[in-house]
Image (tube, rainbow, N blue to C red; front, side, top):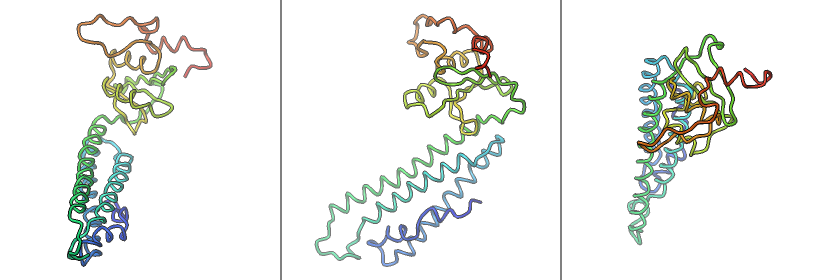
Length: 245
């Protein structure tokens, strides 16, 4: 059970959301806060079951998920506070057209909240399914650092990882996803299932080989530079002794 979920939504904000449409805005505001807590509790239970199944830690995922859900829910309530009812403000000169526009905007806000939940939960479930438990013997991991990123070759859990010093730009992130790498918050790395192809792609993303990964169909294989056929162990051997892991 996640505590204090209701506090993610300020009571005054929830009440203001119904201030121009109801004679009981405080009661409706409380219902809105309760609904948020109920939704997030159900989501947490659903995702926790997936985390337990895969032996993964849900905490870092749900913390980010909760923060974004709260942000979107508050934004929807804030938009809703602009809606007015003729029964509250009076029918004289009631801005019907303007209210229609406002209601469309409100609907988009709530739809955005729902859409985010589904997309984010699917992403979390995928990451939990690919969770890699910490390696008990770090000596089993081979590491080599390139100009752009560090590669970790971890045969004990059948994974190849790319570790960047900062967040890669959108183009790189898109390319990583397109080549089978997925972000793992637990490992703070982009990782893929270990294979020769994955290792070659990792060398490319780390800047150790200069070639384009994505090739049109029925085109010759790209010509790699002199490092492309080397294993990570061989690449490490080329590094100055002081720079070796």
